Image 1 (tube, helix red, strand yellow):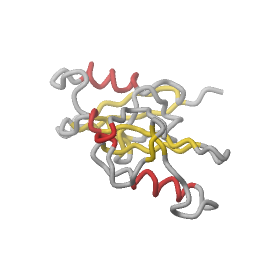
Image 2 (image 1 turned 90 degrees about the vertical axis):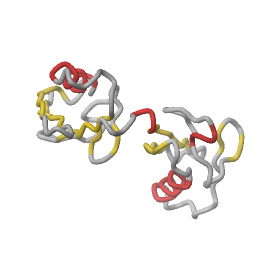
Image 3 (image 1 turned 180 degrees about the vertical axis):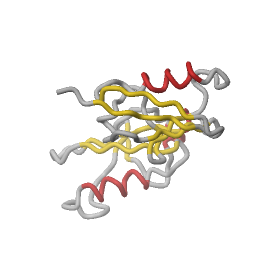
Length: 152
């Protein structure tokens, strides 16, 4: 059975557009609709946020657990290229965990998140590697040349 949600985008000018879509449709459908309906905003400008976190236009409402009448915020003050999503792949079969962060955030935030997700691993017991090199928590994705979708 196909599920539908009605989602809206609200921007800084209090403009709101609303669209009903399948929970399995890519969010670019809603994002493109916003740009089409608000010609004052250049295509690709700004960032779309759900619950304060940037959304990936290639993911679906189901991926974010969106419910009917959820809202995305559009901010022209945020450059979407300042965010990236990194995934930590755990080698002991405990899974993988993704987190969106700023390119200038310390990787300690991602490491702390992973330890919270795997309570059976004591804090500090793991080793985080990127391109075969150990990652230190004080470093940033920008310093290491990481891009959206990279794995650790």
